[in-house]
Length: 124
Image (cartoon, rainbow, N blue to C red):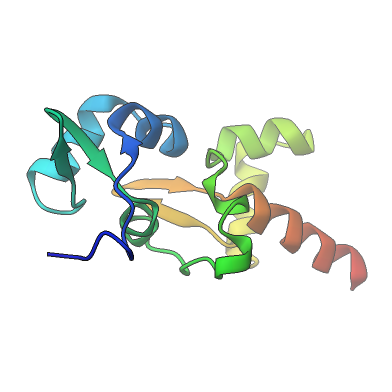
C-alpha cells in the first residue's frame, strides 16, 4: 500500500473521466481490470493524479508542471478545431513529433505539450 503522504487519493471518478474526455464506464473498466489503482473513501472510489498520469502512457510531469497536466486532455478533434485544421492534419503533426498521451486505445494531447511543441515549431 502506498503512503498517504506520497499519494493523495482525492480525485473522483467523474473528475478523471472529465480529464481524459472519456466516459465513466471506461474509467470504471480500467479500475476493475487493474490498469488504474483506486481506493474507496467513504464508499466512493478515489484516485490520485500520479496514478492517472501513469495510465496516460506519456512522460510523468515534472513537479513544477503538475498543475498544467491537471487540465483536461485534448482529443485530436479538439486540437484540429483550435488550430483550424483537419483531424488528418493533426495526425500528421503527431507523426512529426507532437507529444501524445495514450489512455487505453484513445490518443490524447496535453494542452501544455501542444503549447510547448507549437512554440518550438515557431522557433525553427
